[in-house]
Image (cartoon, rainbow, N blue to C red; front, side):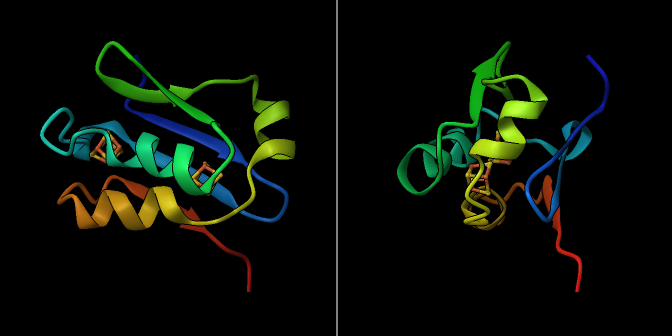
Length: 86
Ligand code: SF4
Ligand code: SF4
């Protein structure tokens, strides 16, 4: 597995840095947050968060709620960075 996952949303880019991912210590806060506040864009494979849908579909599906990044930070991970163009 590559050490990061990057995918585009409508206006942002989301990057998950696997070298900073502390799963399962974080209890997969990003995937849980995506299920609660997002659109089921993420799933767990081999104890890491990956795209649950093809990249083009993720771009359409993601509601840019930012919950994955925020909850990753709260869980002590700090592995997700969402680049928002200003
Ligand atoms: S921004 Fe929201 S919808 Fe998009 S991947 Fe993160 S939690 Fe899921
Ligand atoms: S919440 Fe952060 S540390 Fe935990 S699985 Fe997701 S990306 Fe990795």
